[in-house]
Image (cartoon, rainbow, N blue to C red; front, side, top):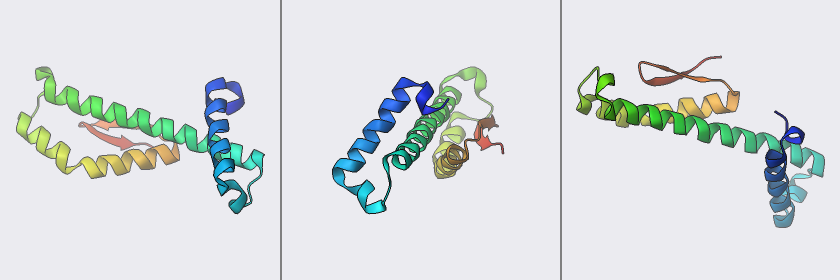
Length: 114
């Protein structure tokens, strides 16, 4: 949904624009209010999407460690793989948030679809 269709998204974006204008950053970039509002709407939306996907990945990892029905490997192997692949998971989630692509778990790894 667009910012003008959701009051909270518009309020968040207006707050970001206000902070940018108070600090003088929007003046140094030569942005008018409409351009700054549009960019801040996009930034806030992508940030919320990133946080939502990170929460999903953490819940998926914790559920595989805690729930005994989901154990396909030993618990130590799952924890080790989760720690070793954490930077790759984070990079995939960041790229999928920028592209607004969904994150789909495949063998407990978040893989994004284009």
